[in-house]
Image (cartoon, rainbow over all chains, first blue to last red; front, top):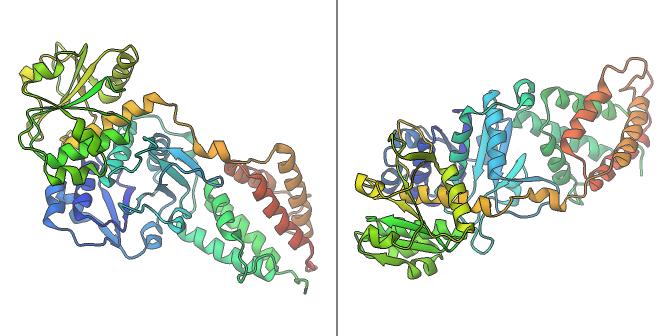
Length: 240
Length: 240
């Protein structure tokens, strides 16, 4: 499963990064991505990696989250168990099943873990197809970063001998760069249509983003939607 | 499940004991037993407990393993996945099911975790009813003590509740009549736009239907999409 990227966003403790590397290697995962870690890797990081130095050494570093997920077809954000009505909010075990199936189908998958104290921001969560939570004590629900990663990697490892979701075998999902271009196009078209007013955005794009994140657009579907936008672009817009 | 005793045998790192307390509390377990820890609890133990001080403070201490398990009807020892012919050697998830059932029946259960570097001795394993292993990378199978405990506590927690998809509880999904009206509207608009030709339908609508079926549209999203269609309806269409 070297197409599954455990992606730490802005982690503050090098020791935790080491412990994450160990948890990954214990479960046969290899690909670690770091988005702007707050500190360089220290001796403590390597001590807590306990032999998973290869994973730390090979970790890819990115300045921004969008760079880190640009080549991924599936993005899963881990977050507390909050009711957000317009996203799929699922337990970790289900997220592992989906990730596993996507991985077998050759997709690239980023699993995002946020800052130790603050998690992922709303803006970061907005790019995710799924929000995954770890069922836990509602009075004491914040897990250590490496402990949370350990659970996800463990769930993934357990699945390595399971049959795959048939739909994942054939679907050609769009990557995040194609999705970004689609949304840039939609923004222009809807603005020309006077449906979208950048001075008064009213959460239109976060809502559309959530809608299309849930569907996980195929490449062919991005082409259809852009075709519709282009057809609309060719129209004479009414003047208000 | 305060009749399930997470029992650390001769642990060497106070930091790990703190992290175990946190992992337990995250998963609503409370009863920690310590068999002859090699060092007293330090500040690091409380730092890594991250608020699970109550579990550390209430931890019971024993001089020997036999004293620690004297009142237990079921003893599960965690150990690497080795073929030991005359014991039950089972994965952690199965051990959690057995523990949960025994707990519901009012039994007292000890789950033993061994030393950081050496695990449990053969003598200690010999008193266990089950040997439980965590499936892992055969080339790198030694988990951090707190990480291993986290997995067991997580598996136990999952058995105490049916984790429900949070999104299903709050989302107001559109009904099929609303969806049918949306598609009828889209058909008119796309036809006026010359994007859709009913005499040569080219599977456009089956494809759009599949796309929006995957996303499971909310009522509020149907309203947005119909708003966009209405804005397009107001445009002057080019003539070909």
